[in-house]
Length: 310
Image (cartoon, rainbow, N blue to C red; front, side, top):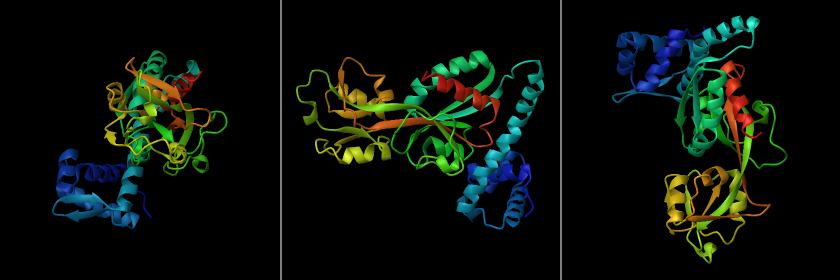
């Protein structure tokens, strides 16, 4: 098979993101026929149909989704190549400093509480780094899916699987990934959060209250424990996110079970009670790709995130 050229990859990504050949042509500043020709050539080289064509536009096939994701990741390496080479050239004169855009995906509470102090230290040590942060809900592919799709260099993600033993050190390879992460990514644990019962302050019987919950509050780290608790009722209210749940609890509308990061925003309107040594624990870590794990900016951010846990 003949390799795809960078411009062919750019066309595939543009078609997938724009939703059609005409819109991709406009985005790239070329003709629609040039886009069509490029896609047909890429499909011939790959040996698979990459897009379903229709009156409404074009959408990636499963083969196309994989090609586009890898295409984004390859194009990202072209983007960071110059910064990495310049840093290597400066290394002879002293420690290299990172520069350029660093794309980060994080779920809401991590973006609020884990990222800011790490980014503050990163800016002091590497002022040339320009973080771009996207808050992504931990549903479906979640934040790790942004890395797999080539839209983020590093994600702060909830890692599936039970928490046992001390937090991990170096990143794990594909064979050591927790369940639920896309294949081929690297991960490392940053912290562990115990879940707690949160209820309206002063309530005499909080376990009798209705349960408030939100869609992201699930996973193998809580599911088995949750099923074994006969005192937990079925959720009667589902909110958009954990901050909304916490606000509703403070208004006396029910009780909730929330992880520690979510409870950093708790006010005097709520009380927090531990769930004991057998209570659920959420593992929070970073996820990146093997090719970006060795870049200066990603390594520097991981170092600052790890410093948070002391």
